[in-house]
Length: 118
Length: 118
DNA sequence: AGTATATATCGACAAACGTCGAACCAGCGG
DNA sequence: CCGCTGGTTCGACGTTTGTCGATATATACT
Image (tube, rainbow over all chains, first blue to last red; front, side, top):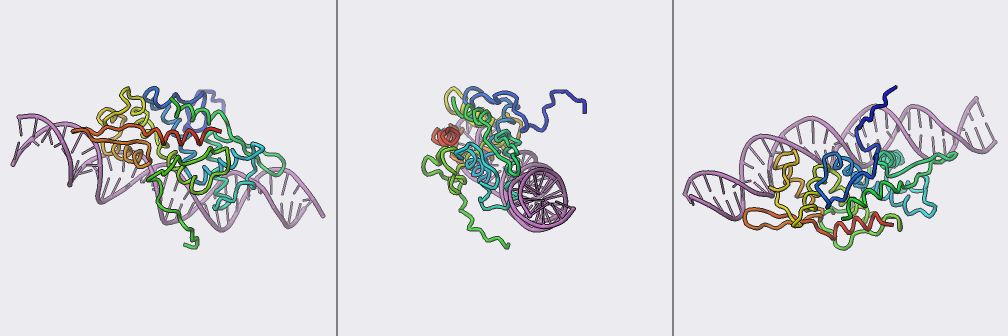
């Protein structure tokens, strides 16, 4: 596993920089469109959006799955959605004892906001 | 079909009002999540995002399909994507003579921006 | 009329997605 | 140690999505 190439990967994993310029500033490049679309896609499902909102709205800034998992789908589906949000860079998660706490990643939100501004 | 959900309408056609409160202000209601997710979904495809960006970045504020349709997919696919953006309320279109001009709907963008702000 | 251009719609198809239950891993407490 | 609870991963399923080519509609120009 000694590969240190700057591999671009299936995208949606890492947002190296601030991701994307404002949509209205100039036509988006194909690469930027790929990254930007991945972020929007992460919030494009109602269940995912509600999960994200519940974490973002939590007073302590973080929430364990047990705290937000009553959204009407099975627990495994909740886990699946949280993974997608994590993979998109919108959430970070940390295990503390029995529970895993999730919090929003402000950088990703900044990227999306910047896209929409302009 | 053991699962008998109320299944909440087609949605995604009209956003009556400003759509949704900030994600971090309070847990999103199911209805708001449905509307919000529909807007994000509209921008969740790279081709669609590029089309939207090209319209938004156009100096005159509007663009005809012929002006933005070189994004690497067929003409019918471009039309399909523009329809989706229109249905999501992100674009308005107006026919003038032979061409149809598209422009961004600022209200929808405002809604998404408000969601992401905290 | 007839032809050419611009956009929309249709029908089909593969790929991606959301969902579930079941099986699995990780800590905790007896 | 063993069971219990929180959470992830797996395999399968029906549905949605993006794409195409072909066809249809609308406007313009001969």
